[in-house]
Image (cartoon, rainbow, N blue to C red):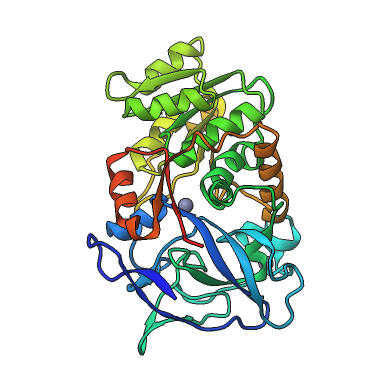
Length: 368
Ligand SMILES: [Zn+2]
Ligand SMILES: [Zn+2]
């Protein structure tokens, strides 16, 4: 089986033949159909994510994907061979405190070391060398083995290249609005950084009937994407102070909800400052290892809330099929988010484009 292996930061991934062990009990073997190029993969490539909880190198990255189930291991009941699935990077045990309280994305049932699947082992090998997994899957490969709760069946009339985006960016962004923040109709929102996640925050705002959706980025091409998917106002933070501009657009108040979709401490702080008194800043983007977010001591008087959102707080077995329905009903724009499709052999180009900020989202479509 071919997979793209990252051996060293800041070096291209190498596509080569690896061995992938068969599924263990509770696991399934899937053939990857399409997989997205996400900033979280890039954080591993440029070395800004290292040490636990991130996996040791070498690693096969990839955590946003659609797939077809090829085979199931013993005791699998949630999927069957032939099912079309969207992969989730948040397996859940169904029994722990988080699962039973309705937060399966925070499941603590699989405490295995970084770089392993849910039973704590690695299944990828090059000769005798074990290769780490990423996101409990590793979708930059022709095939993957995942826990059955990570393979969520979807309608077969859903195009698989677009379905892949629901595996990370769309669920993370739209879920931050709908699940984490529970934005109410008429609310005002702002989103900092309009890549795949930020564009999905905007679409979550549209689905929630937000009255103002203000998009902030440094690149005009990305702000153009933002308008296409529903931003009511755009701000280029190279040209004007985004916090001042957001206040101006909201009668001097700030927005009800401000989303940081990139996870840089200074941007998280801008989201905090852009939220109105009593408003909420939602941190969606994942910061570099060791980063801290500065919060001012005026927080009690301003009564602001700072919330983290992991993966858009999803219940994936509900959210993935629901987002698929939204797409097929024309309520969720996915075609506009895919700026370019790449062949597997072009995977490094997809990340060069991501680093330059060329694409809303680049998707790697596997052959077959
Ligand atoms: Zn991602
Ligand atoms: Zn659990």
